[in-house]
Amino acid sequence: MITLKNHYTYEGKQANRLLLGEPMPIIDSNLRIEGKLLNIPGTTTGSIGFFDYLFSEEMTLPESIETGKIARLKALRVPYLGIEPPFQGNGFLSLIMGKLEQIAMEKRCRAVTIEEVKNPKLIIWGNRHGYKPYWDYRNILRYV
Image (tube, rainbow, N blue to C red; front, side, top):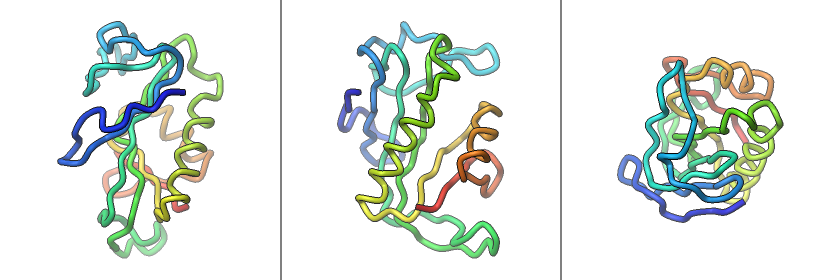
């Protein structure tokens, strides 16, 4: 696993990219959602996949899913992720999200978010691993 620090800017903040496998140009990726090539920022991905993350000191999130009360929480955000098709279903998503949750706890984040989810399989995975939809059901979060 390779980390590319400050790989690109997302909403004015520097985003890091974890690469799985060997580095390769994004143009060589086969990541698709509903048949369309995934529009990924940056220049490099991994031959198995990638996970982007950044930290927000005060992200507006539900304080809890149950109450819906809004709070400003420190969060580790995952705006983009992808596993190349031949490697999907082999546990890479759980492995890397576990690593990112560990990083979030070390940095004293209150939540991990996966944003702008376009693949329904990711929502299903999230439900099985403690992630819940919030706002408009395009984002999922887990409190850590």
